[in-house]
Length: 492
Image (cartoon, rainbow, N blue to C red; front, side, top):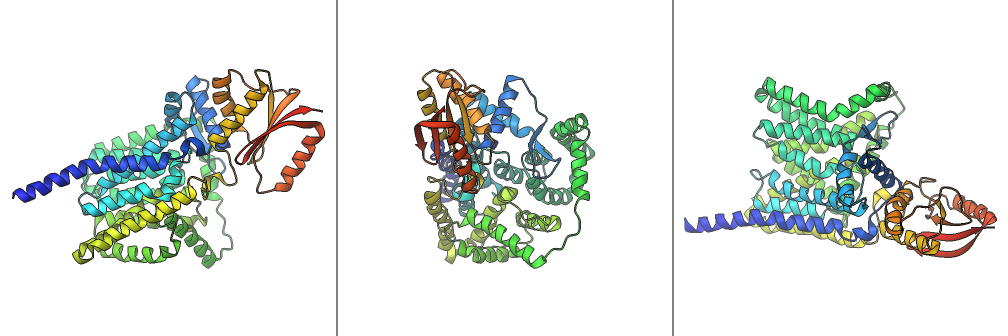
């Protein structure tokens, strides 16, 4: 009995200590090199300028960033959440990025507790380590954008959907789902079948008061949408109708579509689980399907199955190949999918070491790929030919203000995407004004500065632009910081 008590105390200490350790590991991996390599493009600048207006009281927005679908927008929750770190950090995007990393790192802790009653301790340790070291998970955490937080919020949602029904947990799950809807509409749609299954499974527990409370909570969460729609002649409602009515029968090669779809899903699974050894994806996926079928009667296995299959089926219905950010809510299901394999291996005591070996192999694969890519900003899907990283941008602005030497100046730019300077505008209004006390002039000054971002899409366009610039001005000084360049010029 005393041995059992000692083991129980050891397990209790571990259960208390491990979440703390895994949080700091996850957080450290997510903030590494962030001060130099935080991506700050035009979208990040646009969002920061809107938050700036919110904090100053100039504008209380009801709607979030535009989606790729005409007339449909993400929610405003993103801006108000982003306002917290911008307020605390006095406008510093790096503080906002640390805030994002903190929330993402919490996911590594919460996923440890999701399957406390279904998985062995080694499996729960494994799935937390997979979450913490997942390359694609780390990449998403470094993306200061509205879809990013869908990853940890999906973990929080799954934790709330416990097997044993609890009213408060269900209402909490509704809140998380509504917030995910605000952040990335398509991710919420992918998660909807999971929520429906949980509701149907616990239908007998739904008293009228719970239904009323759930509707009330969702009404509050979606109220900015309703108010915006009324104030803007039902723009959102009409956009939704156009989406439903705009799907016309088109000639579709089903085989090619499924093939392209599988390529995307395999890529995201590989980048999340074994980025260094992508050729093993099919083997691991097949092993996972077998283990999932083996455990098909278990509640968590059903949630994992729904979470994996719903994006696949919904994208077939709308005939659209999903982008990386559309599948962000799938990552926790990928991690739990691997946990099912680990659990089945360690069920056989003779193969216990293989389960530990698989965990180490996945962690090793991700860490190797992390070392090769993160410090060099390689293979980060979201910057797509943009090289606007905060460390370089601050050095560019320092050069400009040093050369201006307190005198008025203006600036021009060559940005990618073309002619979208919101990122630079925000950095001048925050970093430039805070450090040097004044802003660039709107009108062209005799001596001015030109910021040049590389154009890897259409180099001829940039060359033509540069030729025209040389006809009206000449270069006095040049400064480069990695891929960014700034020229001090004077009018001819």
